[in-house]
Length: 162
Image 1: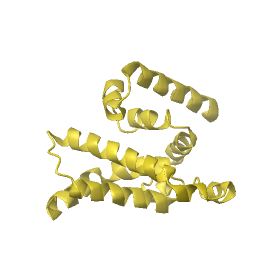
Image 2: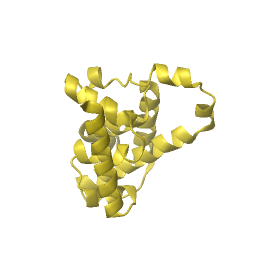
Image 3: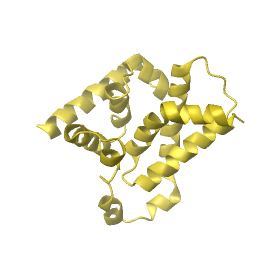
């Protein structure tokens, strides 16, 4: 188990990134909070040794992505009606939590409405600054596929934001 200082420092430095990844998957901030907490718990209990800060960040993004996907597959999510799910879909908390301007909020709302992929690769490229080869490693996908996902996502963004 990791030390309290290590966990606190990781939350301080990478918490925003983990939170944004979780919010991309869930329209309701309660689900994003659950995913965030589960990711931090997995980090706290992990014995993984990281080479550097980027390795730690990539590991946490990958864990957060997997936690969110697992939560989406959970049986209880299948019993929620479409109307209930749609009510809070755009209530991501980004505008209040992160103080993004209106254009950034609009782009993030459009990105969160995309299918996955291209949602995650596009977010990692545009907001986290990862290159396609780095995203390919994170998502365990071929590089050319990642390029296609990013191009498809950008095209969909252009169509919606016109």
